[in-house]
Length: 379
Image (cartoon, rainbow, N blue to C red; front, side, top):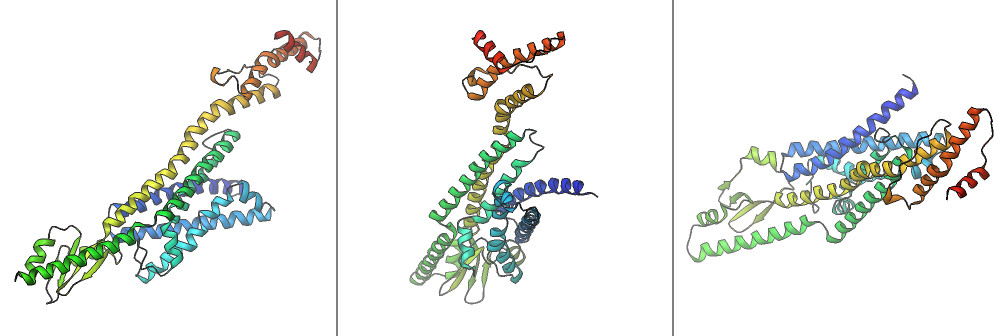
């Protein structure tokens, strides 16, 4: 297999991996939102690590090749090398690798901040860096040649789309940093609320000479957040069996609230669900401009600019290209269309006259003075 074929295979595989990674990014958040099983969520987290590794390897390979050609800075500045490194190594080093280590130890509280042993990782999650940096991989799809034949269209739609996506990414990260992460505060408030409720129930049972277990279960049985009540006498009330509990809950999905007579196991999955909903919304906010510039703006640019420039280029360069350029009224005052109007009114007639002279055998060459004279007479 020669080098050209290998390069084509590589160029076709990477866009497919990018699309898969973007789908994974959304599904990863949807899994938390839809409260999938812990095994499914863990598998998705591991898949994220694999995608980060792939893009890190891609950056290393491209960097080595560019350095060998002494074009490393060109690759970083003009061939989206900066996107390659942003969407791979920061996420891999600051999030994926530490998270994977915690998963191996089976002590990760996925999606929460307080139990994580790495303060940097806490900041990373707070500003939603993994979600955002993985999402900006959509920018790398702008350069796919299969979407547009025009190099000008690819370049300008890529530049405009990149600005839009990166601007949205920066705004989301800044906003997330300012507003903070909702889970820790929500968990603290929930813990204090149920602690206060337990004190009130214990006091009510004592003052009114009521059976505490009956009172506790009558009040809490309708609470959808309650998972289990463990009484100090060894009895318990539970809504989920041990197998169901271990299937859908890990140590970061619930809190324990202790009182004098019992302890409560309370779910905090709804807090994580709300955060996942925000993450999905932010993901679509990032993906939307990318897709819009890739499909809609690039088509508009191709029709209104690239096609006109291509027709002008063909008319000026090709001897047998004699087609007029359609001038749209809404753009007629723009520089490109004014040049196209000159091409239609002056250059093309002069070109046809020259061709006719050559056919008649005169062989008189056309000069710029003749073009200027024709333009003056025509105006």
